[in-house]
Length: 318
Image (cartoon, rainbow, N blue to C red; front, side, top):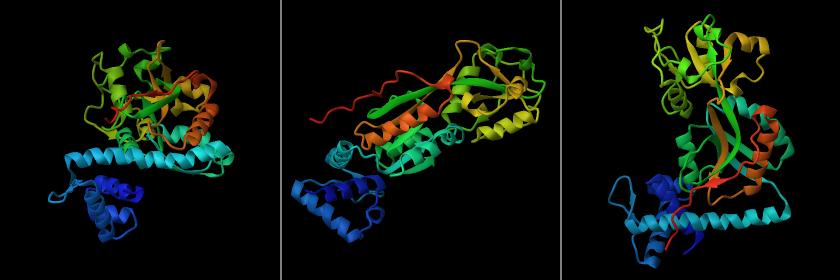
């Protein structure tokens, strides 16, 4: 049994296809198939049901695959331990970040991070929460920045800051007559929402759903977007209102905020923003550096103190 064979097994488990798995491993399909067959012969079990399309792991194969992922991670960890011992912060780091954070948070810390840690090759991709979780579990990314808690087994959550919600209002909107708003002032009737799949949409609905509004003046228009900036532009054209994270108004002057924004009464609804990564984490030094640089780049009122890592334990193998 070799690490190479185990990596081929996990590749097939992810691709559910021998040809695609071989391509992802940069080898020929006969080579991959031969190595997996050799491993099956050595173990005396069949790992994949090849009669099914797509290929499926057998019951014992699934157990072996899960343990293989642990073994591969632990082997990689040896290299990271050596780097940590030498005090090196280097290597490739793949980071996923949700769309409602990316345009506001990335510009705050990316330049400083890449300047401070020139030996880190940071690869950032914008993706929704469920994709980040999936790719973390498949070891396709090293970490994510998203809204927590997730409560997913094996995912570590390291909170960075709390991001309060606020109401972004159209000119002459009735809520502008208030100095502050509460959830009881809001309605789902004239709110603009992100489309399904965005956790921010679900949070906005949760805040608004307690009270039924009086109806919208624009019931003949329905639109959902994947971009908060698009919703802001619609509101500026005198269409209803939307909810935003406070990050979305950084740089807006106080006079402009007075015309367009109303903050919530205490206790304001918030979203907790965290760095997340696999329980069997690698590249801990880069994760720590990332957490540190994001925190230091935030406005003082957003900084969250004494944050601790949270993890839901995976069941142990017996």
